[in-house]
Length: 381
Ligand SMILES: Cc1cc2nc3c(=O)[nH]c(=O)nc-3n(C[C@H](O)[C@H](O)[C@H](O)COP(=O)(O)OP(=O)(O)OC[C@H]3O[C@@H](n4cnc5c(N)ncnc54)[C@H](O)[C@@H]3O)c2cc1C
Image 1 (tube, rainbow, N blue to C red):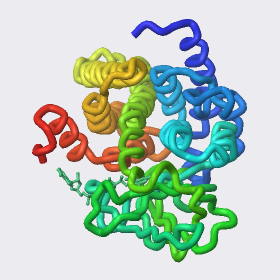
Image 2: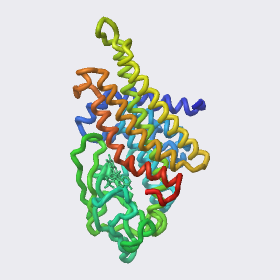
Image 3: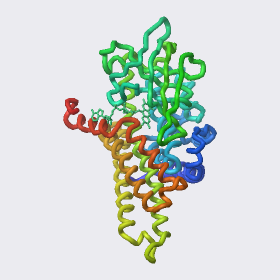
Image 4: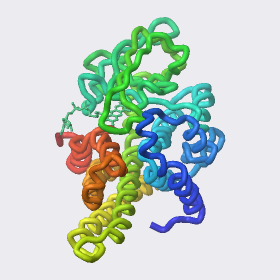
C-alpha cells in the first residue's frame, strides 16, 4: 500500500505518540486499572481521536484507511488505549448519521476532545451473537421512553460518560425490525447502575453490566427512527471490525519487533538464537501472517472509502486478526524463554488483551457465518 504524504504525516504523529507516551507505561497502566483521562485528552489535543469525523466536530475529515493507520500505530503502544479512537469511529459515526443535531453538537466534539467516553450497549445476559433477539424494553410514556433491563459485557460499562443503548420498542417477536437506539448521559439520568467484571485483560477500559431501572429518556434522544436501531449499528460494525483487526496487527507487531531484537542479542550454543531457523522461521511466519491480515484490513477500508461493499472482507479480518495476533504474540513470548513467562515483559499482557477481541464485537463463528451468508445467502447458518 502506497501512502500519501498526508497519510504519512499523520501516521508519524501517531507513531511518535504511541512509542513515546504509550509503550513505556503499557504495563504500569494495567496495574493501575483506570482509564487515564488526561492521556485521552492529550490524544484529543493532538487530533488523534475521531480523525474520520468532519472538522466542525473536532475531526480531521480523513478517510477510513488513514483512520486504520492511526488505530494500528496506537495499538503498537497500548492496545487498550487504541480502543478509545476505534470506539469513537463506531459510535460517533452512528450519532452523526442518525442523532438529533443538538445531541451531535454536544457530544461528538466532547468525544474528539477526549473529554467523553461513550459505551455501546447491545449484548444482554441471554446472548450476544443473535443480537437481533435483544429483550431490554423501551416503552413510550408521554414525551419520554422508559427503559428497563440489563446490558452485559459492555466495554467502558462502569466508566462511560454516556450510553448508546439498543432496546426493543416493538413486540417480543418483532426481531431486528423492533429494535431502536437511545443515547443518554450517565450524569443526571436516574435509574442506572453499573458493575465491572474481573477480566483476563483490558483492565483499563473495563467491561461490565449496565442495569436500567425505569430510566426515562426524552424522545429527542432516540437515535434514528423507531425500529431502525439494529440496521444502524450493523452498518457501523463493518467499519469497526477492520479497525479492530488493525489494532491486533499493531499489538502483534510490537511483540514481533521486540522478539526479533532479542533473537539478535541472546546467545545459545555459541551464537545468537536468531541464527537458528527454529527461532527465526516462526518469527518470519508471524511477520508474514500479520502482513497478510494488515493488507486485507486496509483493502476492506479502501473498499469502504470507495463506497463499495466490504462486509465479507471486514468479517474475514475480524476473525483472522485477533486469532493471528494471539498465535504470533504467543510465539514471541516463547522466543524470550523463561523471561517471557514473567509479568515483567509485555507479551503476556498483549496476549490477554488481544484475546478478548476473539469474542468482543462478534466471535469467529459469527464472522464466518457473515462470510458464508455473503457467498451463498442468508440460508447459511
Ligand atoms: C472484550 C469484550 C468486549 C466486549 N464489548 C462489548 C460492548 O462494548 N458492547 C456490547 O454490546 N457487547 C460487547 N461484548 C460482548 C460480545 O459482543 C459478545 O460476547 C459476543 O457477541 C458473543 O455473544 P455471547 O458472549 O453471548 O456468546 P453466545 O452468543 O452465547 O455464543 C456462545 C458461543 O457459540 C458460538 N455461536 C453462537 N451462534 C453461532 C452460530 N450461528 N454459528 C457458529 N457459532 C455460533 C459463538 O461463536 C460462541 O463461541 C464484548 C465482549 C468481550 C469479550
